[in-house]
Amino acid sequence: MPVQAMSPTEEAKLIEVFSSIQGEGLWVGCRQIFVRFADCNLACRYCDTPHQPQPNCRIEDAPGSGQFRSLPNPVSLEILHGILSQWHRNVPGMHHSLSLTGGEPLAQVEALQLWLPQLRELLPVYLETNGTLPAALEKIICDIDYVSMDFKLESLSGAQTPWDEHREFLRIAAKREGFVKVVVGEQTPVSELVQAAGLIHEIAPQMPLIIQPLTEQGRCAVRGTVLLQLQQEVSRIHSPVRVIPQTHRFIDVV
Ligand code: SF4
Image (cartoon, rainbow, N blue to C red; front, side, top):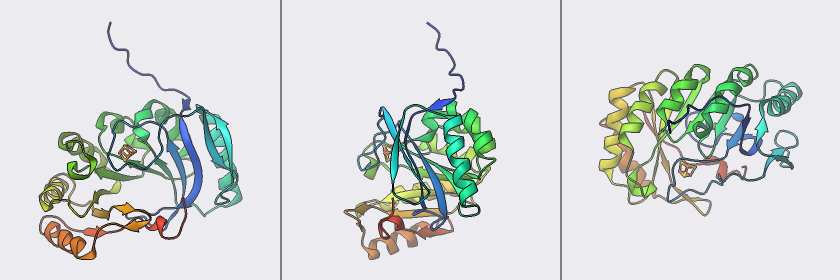
């Protein structure tokens, strides 16, 4: 039987919607509205993000309140747009952007195709992605303002690094402002990071590379001397290279 093309849908499975401070990457410190999507196409060994679809998702009552209520899944564009419009009216100017996070938001690209033109009228759209679904990105890149893209290194994820997918994804993502983030541990081989830096330099030389040390039990799990050495080696291939840990863990916000 021929595979039928997926058509856009008004509904998406969500995990949570809340307002917080971006703790990673170039826009660290910016206040954002986070929409966490369910589902992911990968199974990284270090994943600590809940992304299995549930009958209900949770929505913060007011931005930053930390108080949540349940909403049945899947959620419609009409409902989400209503909530976010109210937040935007109540605290105009506070939010830098709307962060699509996960899970992997592009796993539900059919909903994003319908959602983003309307949501982008409220706030710029910031996509946090594992960088492995280039065909999905191509469908919505016109409605994306910022891209935070991961490279998933084999030494940490436990699966072969999807270099071909990352290459194609980066080619499309380079049309927007953004950066590539690589999570590293104590044992990350320099050769893996050098390969990542070489790919960025070839495809998107303007994009910064962010080295993000692994967080374990709320602490940075990589010694400073290791990070200094990695930054030094990778800077020979590509620039700029910044080392930024997950700062939201330090100030105890979601
Ligand atoms: S891509 Fe992200 S959400 Fe998906 S398994 Fe890996 S760490 Fe978890």
